[in-house]
Amino acid sequence: MKLALVGAGKMGGAVLTGALRAGVLDAAEVGIYHPDEARRTALAAQYGVTPFTDDDIHAAERVLIAVKPQSFDEVAPLIAQRSAAYISLMAGVSAETIARRVGSARVVRAMPNLGARVGLSATALAHLPQAEGEDVAFAERLFCAVGTVYRIPERLFDAFTGLAGSGPAFAAVFAEALADGGVRVGFSREVAQGLAKQVLLASATLLGAESPGNLKDEVASAGGTAIAGVMALEQHGLRYAAMQAVEMAAKRAAELSRADER
Ligand SMILES: NC(=O)C1=CN([C@@H]2O[C@H](COP(=O)(O)OP(=O)(O)OC[C@H]3O[C@@H](n4cnc5c(N)ncnc54)[C@H](OP(=O)(O)O)[C@@H]3O)[C@@H](O)[C@H]2O)C=CC1
Ligand SMILES: O=C(O)[C@@H]1CCC=N1
Image 1 (cartoon, protein in one colour):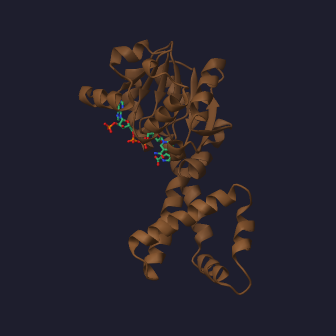
Image 2 (image 1 turned 90 degrees about the vertical axis):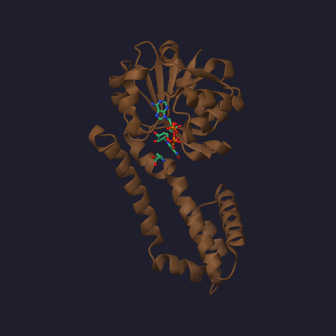
């Protein structure tokens, strides 16, 4: 089985690393394509796989598309072949669009997140009816190697992209803002950032076993400090901002599905 990875960047690289580590992929069977020869040689050496040329892609049985949506129109003719199965993790490019451009309807669509780097991705999976059982099973194994897979209808992909795909960026902004607060009340940047990260890590771990509302209630005692802080968050619209962030990210994913908006 030969798999060609097209786009060994942050996300493609995270999935490749996790799948190699888990033994889901055999390095000898994987190649990385990049139009620049020096770049594909360097990337292949970095991941311990083979550099793939245009010809190698045409001989691959499976192609993992992990370029930016904006690069897809340029990449599609290079990777198109009727007999291959495709897995895409691009935001906002529908399985139908991919099938049309690559000439094969064996398309599985995935939406992971950067949690893949630490085996904690929430990955959505959907596929066209023409995808074969093994195409879907292979994609499921690939993304199970980097986290948890959710089979959802493709119509929910933009929503999933808004919440789970983009969510790590929102959490990171919140972590940065907490650290800024720490600097404001007198800690060095280094200490404030370390504390903010540890608070979020502990909270995320606690949230594995209870609801967000419960955790908040357990910290916020009557007349105490936490409820005073929560009131400030409410006053400044943190909830509204977070809801809007998810909605705007989902809307942007929908925009990207229109070629002229990419
Ligand atoms: N980052 C994230 O958190 C998430 C990203 N995604 C999706 O993953 C995809 C990639 O995003 P991300 O990894 O962040 O972006 P990156 O820019 O890190 O990765 C894109 C990679 O594609 C390479 N590339 C560009 N053009 C070509 C080409 N013609 N042929 C082969 N490779 C090419 C780039 O190489 P070079 O650097 O040399 O230009 C780069 O390494 C996007 O479609 C995005 O929607 C999905 C979920 C989460
Ligand atoms: O912002 C992006 O393009 C990617 C897609 C999902 C998360 N990040």
